[in-house]
Every structure is written in structure tokens, then in C-alpha cells.
Figure 1: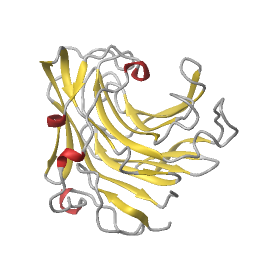
Figure 2: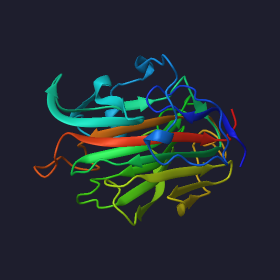
Figure 3: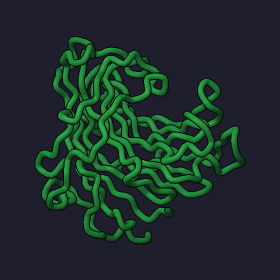
Length: 268
């Protein structure tokens, strides 16, 4: 596979540039080998904001805050807490690379350990840098991995999904779910997506679990909308229609740990 693009291994918390690497380089397996944060990289370059409640299909019970994410032992740690702030019952974090990094085609992967508990919805996903074909979901969304109630009623099941079609409520989606062999909340796993003009493939720990080669948008012919640059998001949502509400069994605070995010090849 071609070398990683100039952004190479995405620095976890600052989402800034790391030294160039090659796709055939050994994959880091722990904090010691995770990409280093550049000297003086400002943590404040991250975006923390509300996620669109209509997209998320939720009652917005949580607030995304910058102090809910940190670098810890070389890893990005997003923490969801049960606390009342600004009229919300929970806090968490969402990070995105919009206007700092977007890519089109190639391979993206992250080595992650998911949070455990009922009412949790961790996600590693992509949205269009510019909504060329209209508002959500006419310009597309690519969910590399989502989990619903991981380690609880959701077990080790993960989801890979495309959203496309028309603008909401005329959107459609297509995807697969897969039961990972070992605990997604106790062990690190590599979640990956390979994306080219005519096909998108989802992997976990090197195992192919989903393929899609048909999609559409009402605004343009195939391969739209997945023929434009997309940016990266990482977040832990709490509550909503997809996972349901937390219960007494959910032990807060809970964390999602990200060892690294890498983008290989790709086109501008």
C-alpha cells in the first residue's frame, strides 16, 4: 500500500501532524509506540460542541466539553461522566478534524478500547468536509464503527454503516453488525475502513465484516456522495434512541481509549 499521507499517523489529541511514516511500518501496539504529540501542540485546537440532535435521533441529555478529553500515557482518553452541567445530566467529548484534515479514498484505522455500559454509544466516523450534495444525509456519512451498550446488553457487537440518499427525512442507510470475538471494552481492537471509488469495506482486527458497493444521493449519480473528502470524528454519546438511557448498572465515569488513528494513501 502507498505511504501514509503527509498527515501520517494522526496525533491523537491535537489531531496535528506527526512525522511521516510508511504503511508497511510496524503497527504500534501500546502507549510507548503511539504517535508522539508535537512539541507545543495546543490541545485547544480540538473542537468540542453539540452533536446535531436530529442526526443523532436523541433527546440531548449530554454536553460535550473539552475537559472530557485528555492525553494519558500517550493515548487519547474520552471520559463520559454523570454530572449536571448547563441543564444536561451527562458530559462527554467529541473531537473532529473539520477544516484541519479531510481525505478521499484510502484506508483509515484506529486502535481503540470502547467504554462499557448501558446507554453508551461510542463512535468513530466520517462526515463530508463540504456538504456538496445537500444537508444530512444527501452528502453522506460513513460510520467506521459504532457500538450500542457495549459490554452490557450490546455485548461485543459493533456496527459499520453508510448513510446517504436524500436530505432528512428522505435519507436511507445500509450496513452490517458483527460480534467481535473478545471483549471490546477490556481489550484494544483495530477498527478499519478501506474506501475507494466503487467500494467500501469494514474490518476489525483484520477480519472483513462488511462490504458495500451500491449507494446513492438524490443530487448526483454514483459514486456520489462518497466521492468527496470527509473529515474524522471520535465521540462517546450518552443516552438517546439508539442505545437507550443509562441504568443503575452503568458505572460512571467511563472512558474510551484511542491508541492511534492512521490514514493510509487517499486522495485530496
